[in-house]
Length: 453
Image 1: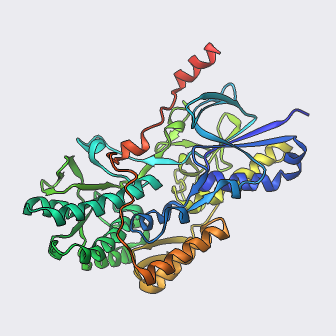
Image 2 (image 1 turned 120 degrees about the vertical axis):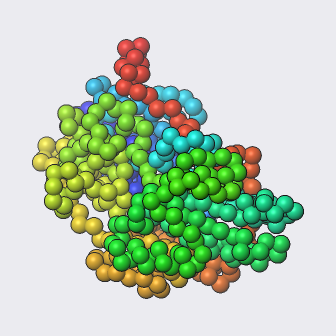
């Protein structure tokens, strides 16, 4: 029989777990050469996104939150590049390799797990001045940027400039924004003893969100406890407030107030990869519509999962309920997707994805956290133990877990040296700078490419 090629797009939570499951389920077929599994990813690692705020805060090193694909993937072929277009009618992907070369990659089965990108809005100055927190480069840059602002403030003789450089704004009251503000506030507070010319009262972190509550998924009581804890640490919380304009030296809020600052971190949610938005298929809230079996309607050999897919949530009432774009769901969807790919190869019926949420954890830095595991409401040191235990359990490889544990212990007893790496100096470091590099092909461009070939 002819070799069947399974292409997996992306190597995040969903993509990597799917590949590992396929390798396990199809081990004999892969070894015989009956099946080829190809995973396309621009990086040679999977990034554990929930711990990015600790990278920016210097608690963890960049290597400790990455999972090596060469170690994790045993039998699948890795193609270093980005899928910039998919020709669903002709079963082929367009791949831009990291060398810049563009090639076609035909498939027999396709698994779409390209993940998500930072969601942006049409706000004047946002593209030019907002920093992100969605990948390693952004986290490393944010740390360098924040420490450089403290150094410049310490060296400045202008009171207005010094105050502006000590003001930091984080937009987005979800998990990424809240954890970023909380962890970075502890970093700057600890760093002040190294900058004697900065008065503690000048340091100010502001967390902004358009919603009326902070992290509503936690529940009212835990959300209010987190809000109170952050405010007692000196973080200003502005709810029901948005951003109207951003300049190099100032941010204007929708309530009319202006805040002099050189730092605005944009974490106001995510949106699915541009790849799926250009597929010319049905979308739900910006994500590609699939069935509970993760199959793309009309294309029985194409599956989608993770942040890019609108998967029906069978645990909720109502036909319009879809699973939230979380790592918890992505990693579990991967098992269902892989099993259904194998079932489609062997002519067996597909299974439906159904997962009851295990709860949520939020690390607020140091010994402070709030958690809602299995219906329990926890805060303080107990919640921090549960939070870190959850992260360790979710990391795929034992060596990665050991690196994280070693980093936590080292930071606990050794503290931070407050060093700037400096390798990203000269870059603006904005969301557009780090996340807008790939040009994805539209459905019309794909059709033109097909005609030309």
